[in-house]
Image 1 (cartoon, rainbow, N blue to C red):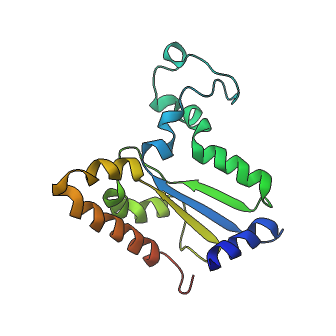
Image 2 (image 1 turned 90 degrees about the horizontal axis):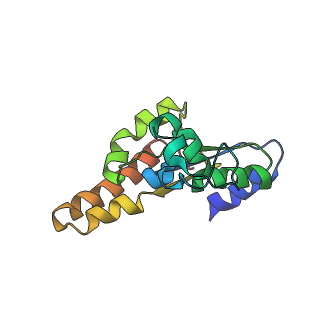
Length: 160
């Protein structure tokens, strides 16, 4: 509860700075949002099959309507403008893999340490669920999620 109260203050105090760091798989990255935007117009629907053949070439346009970018726009309109939202999601990744690459992703985004003004959201539910039902991978999944949380703590400032 302490971090949510702190973050609420960050959203409303003009000089405060905060970050929302989002980890997840392809849905969080934006891959399931490809039919909701066309040419940057969020309300307009279009047929992308002819116009946007190469997903990777146009993934920025596709991800405009992802839940992360809709959330980012909401934060910008409701907050003081000093909150940065980082989408560190990777398609196909589950918690165990994200725990392995977290340090590199933070470094690539120039994130040194988490502090009490930060919120980290983890959305690996789809990819983790696929592993959950395979009994041979159940312990790997549990260990991977625990390792991810421990890595987040490792990258946090003391007492934050």
